[in-house]
Every structure is written in structure tokens, then in C-alpha cells.
Length: 456
Picture 1 (cartoon, rainbow, N blue to C red):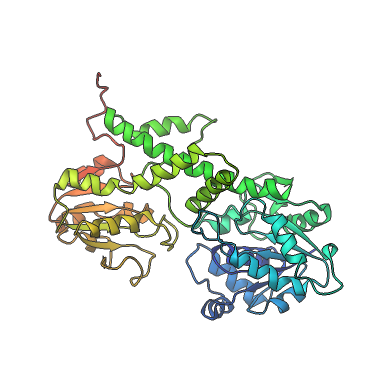
Picture 2: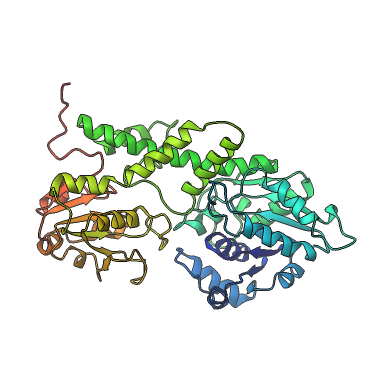
């Protein structure tokens, strides 16, 4: 039976959640207070790039199964499940800023006049479920009490650039709460996903596991997952430095590591480190939570420190090869924090550009998705990947866009003043780059012909 769902907050998470639930056949009302975003959403368009999302928005709004409003009361009248998907950015002390979540709680409380399940989809501090229950209770209308609503934690595991697929084909669905009735209602909303019974699904066999647990444990699962993945990336980048010192090739090392089922091959790509809105925020939040309880989370702090240091690698390598970066023309391929998105938040590529500008380099960048007007001040924008190399002393691959692999490297070389290609994402095969007359430098990679073991 279709559920009636309200999704409050139409950012990267909320818009995907609303569009996908509508695709599953539910009646969904999205809430967005920004008038420009609201106008786009009502036209069936996302205010950001996410593969496949515009198609779902267009289909949902056209069919009437999905609508958007800025009126929380109206959305509450139409629903039984309320998904909170507002932002929780890092505050000054490392803890997430919960002001938007608090504002939503105060808005929905007066409208809880029938039984509702309040589902926390945003990434929130451990313990938020209890805090949110108390906050809502304090703002309920007269004559209504705690029995009129339940709190369920349902953390999201959506990767930007792959969020629609991640929602429809998840590895697991985590539901945390203390009332079986509420957990069952949310699980039923996911039933088409769990059973693979929805249009164009499933693309893989087997049912999706559901983890029923406490609110606190569900909140911890989200932080644990992202912190582990961030630590894995920092580990491989530290490993890349060691490989460079001893003459090993990190891509061959990690390929062999990934064949071990205990390790797995994902998130073992050396490069500029992680960015975006999730890993850094969640890692800092878990460190702050540990600190509040008097524990020094040494591994997590080290993972964060390694990631910060990794962004210096481009300038270090350019200084090593060019000797002088001041006045050099540097082309940068990519600005988004990773391929498949136009998101610049905490982007390593943007950090590279800013560091080069600090060293008085002339920086020209190209990104296939990021609009021309976006990006750091002082960076020139090229119309295509070849133009970024015009009179360049070096070209840096800063985002792993797969379309960069189709660049005519000989044409790139012909536009350059120098011949250095610094592949900060290990996207290219060194032999192919060198065949085009370019000098190849990667992260933790040996050069062709240097595969012979060296004695100590």
C-alpha cells in the first residue's frame, strides 16, 4: 500500500529521497523554503547535477505523485511519514550545527495532530533521537502528547553522482527506533526497494537486508561507515608516499590488496584524498563526540591529518619538477570534488587551484560539469580540456572524470609550453602519456621501466 510522505529539505539528500519515493509509487510532498530552488523543483528540475534525478523529478511532478511546497503545515496534512533532510554543517567546535533540524522540529510539532513517524534522514550527532523527541514534545499543541509521534533514525548512504542508484539499490537499509509500529511503517515505505518490485528494478538478485536497531546505534552506524571509508582513503594515500620512497607502484600494490576479500578493492585509489560534504564533516563529528566523552580518537585524527596533508602533494611535485611555480602557467583538469557531480564543497581540486594561486601561478581550469562562473576567484576557465593546456608549463588532473581518458594527449602536448602531466588521480596509464611526448608523474606510481625490485 502506498505511503504518504513529506520530505523536509530539498538539498542533495532530500531531493533524491523525494524523487525516489515517488518513483516507488508513494505520494510525496517535498518542502523547500528557497524560492528559486522551489521554482526549479516544481518544473521537475534539480537545482544541482545528479545522474538520473531530473528524469525522476519530471516523471513524479507530471504524474502528480510528487509535489513541492514551502508550506510545512500543508505537507504535514498530506503525510504519515515525515523525513527530515536538512543540512547539518560542521560547527565551530567540530560538532554538527543542528539549528536547521531544531527549526524543523519546532515547525512540525504543532502539526502532529494525528499519528506521524518523524524519520531523521540527515546525518546527525549520536543521541539526536532523544534530543529531537524532547524538543518536539515541548512544542506539541495543547492536548497532544508523545503517543502522537515516533522518532526513527534512517541514515542515508547516498554517494553524490550515484545517489539515485544508491537509494533504489542499497546495500542495506538501517532503521533505528524503540517502537515496532513506527519501524514497520518506515520499512513498508521501502518495501518496493527491499523486494526489488518497482519500475526498472532490480538490477541485481537477492533481497536487501534491513537492520532494525536502536536510534543511537543507527546514528552510530552512519558515522562509523563514513569514518572507516575516509580512513581507508587516508591509509592508501599514506601508502602511496611509502611506495614512492621505496620505488613501488601503489596501483599494483592496491590491486593485489583488493583481491583479499577481507579488504576489498573499493576506496583504495591513491590521489588527492577525499572531499565533499560528508567524510570530513562526519569524521570531525565523531572525533568531537569521542572528545566529549574524554576519549582521544587517534586513528580518526590521523586520517583527517593525512587527508589535509595530501592536498599539498600537487604543489610539492610541481616544485620538484618545475623548480619555480611563481609565474608558471598551470592547467587544471577538474574542479568538482569527484566525478559525477558539480559539487565544489571541500573539493581537493579547488584546494589545488587555491594553493597554486598562493604560489603566484597562473591557473586555468576546465570541468565538464561545473558552471563557468563557479570556482575559486582568480582561476581562468577554459572551454574544453585541450584549451586548458594553452602555453601551460604543466597540466594537473585533479578530478577523475572518465571523459578525460578520451583526451587526445598529442593535441594536449602540442598546446603546452612544458611537457609535464601531473596525474593527481592516477587516472591515466603512464605508458600512454609518455607515448604522446609528455612526462608522466602520478601519486605513488613508478615510471615505465622502473618495475625492477631495488635492493636496500
